Amino acid sequence: MPLQKEDVEKIAHLARISLSEQDIPVYTHHLSDILIFVEQMNSVDTTGITPMAHPLDAVARLRPDIVSESNQRDHFQTIAPQVEEGLYLVPKVIE
Amino acid sequence: MHNKTLTELRKALHQREYSSVELTRHFLERIERYGIQLNSFITVTTDIALAQAQIADKCLQSGNAGPLTGIPLTHKDIFCTNGVKTSCGSKMLDNFIAPYNATVVEKCQAAGMVMLGKTNMDEFAMGSSNETSFYGPVKNPWDTQTVPGGSSGGSTASVAAHLTPVATGTDTGGSIRQPAAFCGLTGLKPTYGLVSRYGMIAFASSLDQGGPIGHSAEDIALLLNVMAGFDKRDSTSLEHPQENYTTHLNDSIKGLKIGLPKEYFGEGLDAQVGKQLDVAIKELENAGATLHDIQLPHTYLAVPTYYIIAPAECSSNLSRFDGVRFGHRCDNPQDLMDLYKRSRAEGFGAEVKRRIMIGTYALSAGYYDAYYLKAQQIRRLISNDFTEAFKQVDMIAGPTTPTTAFKMGEKIDDPVTMYLNDIYTNAINLAGLPALSVPAGFVNQHPIGLHLIGNYLKESRLLNVAHQYQQCTDWHKATPPNFV
Image (cartoon, rainbow over all chains, first blue to last red; front, side):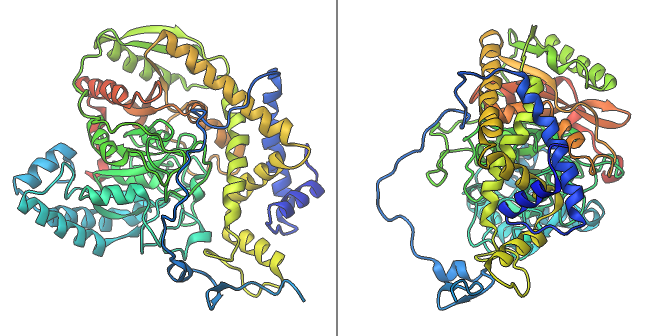
């Protein structure tokens, strides 16, 4: 298998997803299957091919730098898990 | 009332045969009767629907009505609806009341349409069977043992069972066309950028595209008239002049060159589906189209390429769900890392986690070139195949799916087998082309879809061909026996 238990633990950490001990073998198996499947991509030589990021090769549209939105902080914070005086609360980061 | 086309409904509303409130109540009653059995709704918006219907009736009475004023529809639960739960089929957003409307929702409302509710879907639109929804699987009205397809399965099951005349959906790799095929409906994925993505919860931003689902080409052309259009709030919205997609429905298709890619009719296609498809293509020939053999040599790489690009973009897009600003938050986080990790572990289902992790891996240091860059290069090759094909033909025809709807539970434990179901649809999103699925008959009482692919911005021609096909066939008029 292309991935080992340690690889999956590292990927899960990078993705900020906690996995239980019992989940890890299942994910190792499924993610490995997917990686084996996408190996087919190596059957074609892509030297010199320009990568395609956007279907119509469009570039970002520019707009004048003027304020277009009103401040709706209170409205948007009504759906936040925990706020205080307009701030989002998270566990203490700096001791 | 529930078996009428949009044009018939419009006529009835304008001639006061019934009011929009009466029409809306009729569909709400059907939703009450059949909705739970099919599990096709996440939220039914009864009060909003009746209020919108009353406004529509006033417009109809005062002569200020547009073509779709007073006609009900449903939105896939991926479109943000102001003040209404917008879950995207996920526990992560089970408590999310959207604070604004998606442009598509806004446009439908401005057109006087009536929102009946929000339909069930695969979690974050990641799935081909509607089995990954936090709210449970949707059933296919044609055979409740089978899946309706995904990810817009709630939308297609609802339209097929006549719980709504039309519905919105989204298509990142086939999520409108595949469930439309499985449920015997007409569904269109427009050219990338034609329909605004503003307020449409992002899965893979360079592939996602909203579109209409209905019984006939004419119905979805009318809905596309409302949905399409430039939106300055979507950075990839196309600055394309507004079209009327019904104008050319009745044009002749005489002389239309249809390409048949040999890669679409080979190994992997169910023999009975292939046979039925040949009949459908023959109908197009009888209507005046000419058939041409073409090649799309990189077809076999579409699914592997898609399953790197889509997860890569998803891993980036879904990083916003962090338990801080909105959505699910775990209880008693020990520290910030614990808050992120447990909120995401609890909020996301297995398929979403798999795709986030594949994407994270493909984008991580040391693997980026081998996976993501490689996939973007192959994406170009796939797109070039279509460019070459459209030098020879006007349109491409093939199957929408390799088989009819499969049994519930059959593929859910094997991700790669599930992904292969998207073999004919993924490439279209990678290239950004428009394509639609039209009902083209049945195999063992299960609907099949004819897939028509057009060149960029050829929606009008696609709808024209589909409409002409529907003038000589009546597959799109079939109703599942238990939902008459």
